Image 1 (cartoon, rainbow, N blue to C red):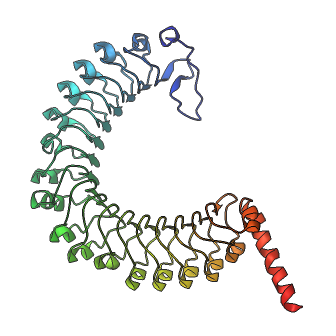
Image 2: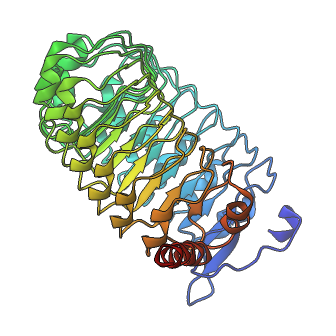
Image 3: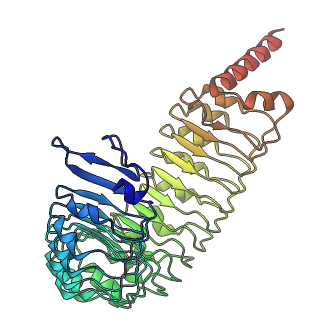
Length: 445
């Protein structure tokens, strides 16, 4: 095998899975073989003699075919063949009955062999970035949990999968699917469905009504489409917890959106919103809100009503100020308001005492409110590329700031502050403390 590869294959310990190496069991039998990025142009036949092989990685090579004798690997559980040049699979492939995880991403497959239905142990199948137009009827015999068909040539929903009742995650991104069959209701275990990048200009009843039949569905993705509006009936998807509609052309939401009471994560990034739509303020379970790359000019006082928020992403908008009610979001742990036009922060920011990360890069801030000294759980503070001339004094009270996670680069700091700003957090805080002591002494005099 080493002669075939052109270099000695090293043994690999249990601490990781590098691209190249092998593992053995107590009897010195090879159980794991990792030959990724080895410039292979054919399947190495010596592998077929490794009868105890359970894990085989051959990704990032240029293998065009697999031998029929691959069926000899009767104990194989994980097979990674992504990024090769496979245009078909041998019919004997179905004899790999112990196979649990199969990765065939980024090949040239247009179909699967009929014997595929014999892979009774298969739980995870990744077929993204191939040329598949349909799936065999026999695929319904599988017990899959995860099926990834992203970036293929599907023009309609693959009807043959609707009887895979074990299926939990179905990814159909970057195809051309315009409707869902009513029979999708048979996927009683389905928890995640993605229809991102299917050139959808609307969500018709032929998609929405079948979705209502999926009682276990909690994650839904319509990102990277061409949606200008959402249907009024979107509010009937009451079980959805994670909704992604990033990179569309939305500028408003229907009133019924407020009915999505189970929603915990909402991604509306890369749309055309000029304000946060009112229905969002009534989502009392919402923990993560992604609103980057819109055209937000301000946040209303009602924004403070989303009191369940833990993570907030508002990068690359046009915000100049934050409302005083921002301080009501006391559950917040991470806040990213990078690339806006903030001139100041409200005093109420000091109420966010669970805050751990505050990223304010690329704004127009020249000071911080004194109340920020109350953020005693803050670990990371990024103030790069603002308009600070001196280091804000409130920083000296932030005792949990990590050593290298106070960032002040790109500010027009005065000479003394510039010299201090490149030091670690403790040195900066000591400098600010001494500066305060000196001020107090001068006042007494």
